[in-house]
Length: 358
Image (cartoon, rainbow, N blue to C red):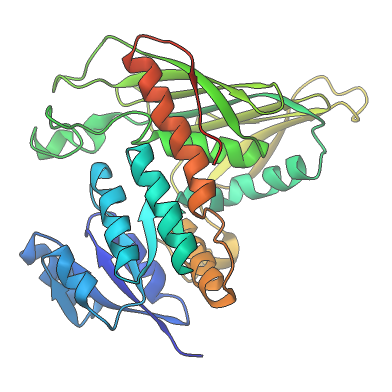
C-alpha cells in the first residue's frame, strides 16, 4: 500500500495534525508551511519533515502532495480550501469550513465535480466520551429527540492573553467570531449526536465585550427538522475553566455531560437516564475517558488526546475507499451554514433566519 503524502499549512494547531498523520501507517508528512519561517524550520527539524515553505502557493505547486491540511486563521479556511481543491489536493480543514455561504457552496461544487475528498476537522466527534452516547441515540434508545444543548466556553485570555492584541483571534478589524470560532465544535457535535438538521435560527450577542473590544458571547436557538429545539452558547468571556458541554433529551431517555471537565487524558463523567429503568430517581453517572481513546492512549497523546489521530485515520480511509468522509462537504455545510445564519441573526438583533438545506 503506497503512502498518501501530506502538507501542513499553519503550524499552531497544525502541529497536532502533523503528529497525527506521522503516527499512522499509510501516510507521510512531506512538507510544512508557515509565514513564520523560523517556526517552520523548527517544526520541520523537530518532526523530521523534509520540505519547508513560507507561502501557500508553494504547497499548491508541490506535485508530490496528495493531502493539504489547513490550520490557519478562521477567515482564510474557505479560500484556501477552494484553491487546494482547484490544485487537485484532498483537503482536511480546521473548523470552520468557511465564513460565507458562497465559499461553502464552492467547496461542495469542487469536491463533488473532481472526486477529491474534503473533510472538516471537528475532532470532537471522535471524543471517546461521546461515541457510545451517539450510538445509543442513533439506535433509538432515547426515543424521539426534542431538545439538546451545546456549549463552547473558553476564556480568550487563555489563548490570546499572553500574545497581545495583534493575535488574529482578537484583532479588532477581523476578530474570531463566536459561532464560527468555537461554535462549530458545539453546533456540529450536537447535530451529530441528535442526527438532526437545523432549519432556522434566532440568536443574540451579549453586549459586553472583551478587554480588546471584541464580542465574546452569543446564544442561539435552533429549530430542528423534526420540530425539536436546541440551544447553543459560545463564550470567550466566561470566568470558568474550559468546557465543552452537551445534553440531549428524548421521549425515552436523557444524556448530560458534566460541566466540570478535566484535561484530555483524564476521566470525565456522563449522566444518563432512561424511562425503562423502573424506580430510577436520579441521573446515572458513568465515568469514562475524556478526550482520548484508551486503545490508543498508551502509544499516542496529542493536545486533544487521541481525537486528531482518529480523525486523520478516518480521512485516510475515506480517500482509499473513495467514499464520503465522516464530515464531508455537505455534512460540514449543514453545520457551518447554521453558524453563519446564527451570526446573521445576532448581528441583526435577533430576527429569525432560515438555514439552507444542502
